[in-house]
Image (cartoon, rainbow, N blue to C red; front, side, top):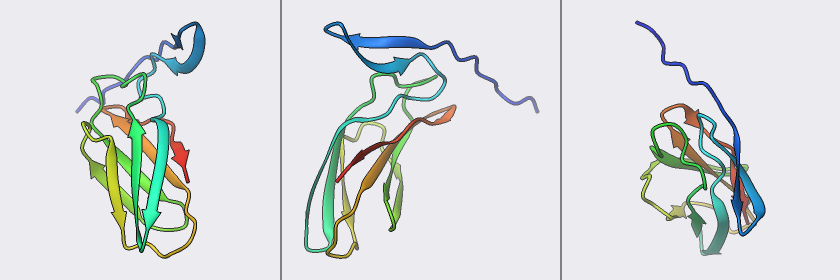
Length: 110
C-alpha cells in the first residue's frame, strides 16, 4: 500500500486587498468568524467556512471545548453545532476543519 502524499504550495488569500489567510496547503485554513451563544448546559457554536478548503475539499469539522469534551464528525456543510452536556462556566471552543490531508489550524471563540 502506498501512502498518499501532498505537496504544499502556499498562496495568500486576500479580501479587498487585506490578507486573511495562507491558502494552498494540503489542509484547510482556519474556520472564520466563530461565535458562541450559551445557556443552561449548552452552547451554540457558529462559524464561517475556511477560505481554503484544503486538498479535495472539506470533509468535516471538530469542535473542542477547551478543558471539556470533543465533538467529532460534524458535517462539512455545517456552519453551527449545538454543544450539550457542559457546565455553567466560561469555555473557549476550538473549531477545526478537515480535508483528506487532515486537520487545519483551529479557530476559536468564547
